[in-house]
Amino acid sequence: MDIAALRQMLDEAFDHAVVHHGYTTYMRDYEVIVYATADPSTGVAPAYLRYLFRYCVEARCETSVAAETWRISLDDRLIDHATGADLDGYVWGVKWHPLFPGARVLPESEATRRWSKAVGIDFHEVRLETNAHNLTLVFSDLEVSEVQVGYAPFVAD
Image (cartoon, rainbow, N blue to C red):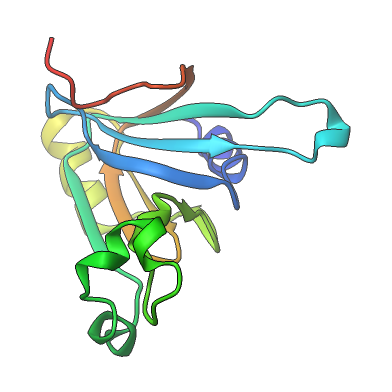
């Protein structure tokens, strides 16, 4: 995959809402579902976009929420926006995270070199940062497509 094209695809997701991320049902590829919106005056309709990181050999997810915030965010009422909105703590129930400061391609690493040599195709590493999770993915290709409202990534065939 061309690095310039990869960077452009990731830049287009900047500051949109991540509404889901995880391995696909067949467990090879990793998907990030983004709700993309634009200023209404542009005439660009909102859309749900599926960022499919193909041949994903490594996926690391870590919190970006500070320990002090975690400490006051353990109440289960915070997983529902209606019951958590007026409580102190992180309201998990908003069900989305802004992709900010965004996503970036990382420099070639030991992992990308090792996987490229072992499998015989190029691998890349990216970092996606939100206000709740940071993802680091090692993969070979990225496809972006629109999905319909109600797309359920974990429904078995």
